[in-house]
Length: 104
Image (cartoon, rainbow, N blue to C red; front, side, top):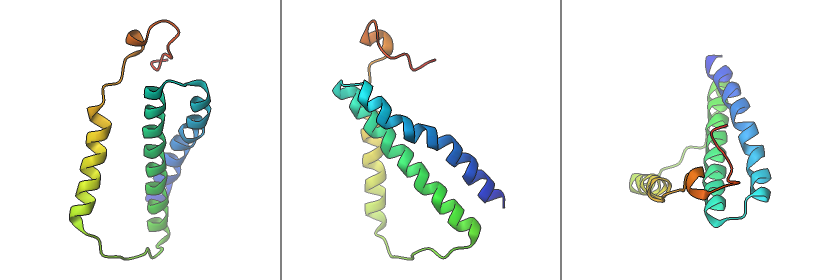
């Protein structure tokens, strides 16, 4: 029951973010902004997948069992982490007047 409650709370947090990504995409045209929105979209979808897995676990549902290659899983995680951390993103001050203020 605890897992189900946590999953629903997480879903409530993720839903507005998931809805905001396409709306922000219409407002922001710079490539670096689009890159950030792509990253945000992937992350929020991954979060939603995790919520779904938690709900399945809470319900006692049987998941699909499959053999995976650990080296592929680690490689995917390493690549995602490096891609998300390596690119420098300009701050609103660096962007100049009229930039979106993410702190508010």
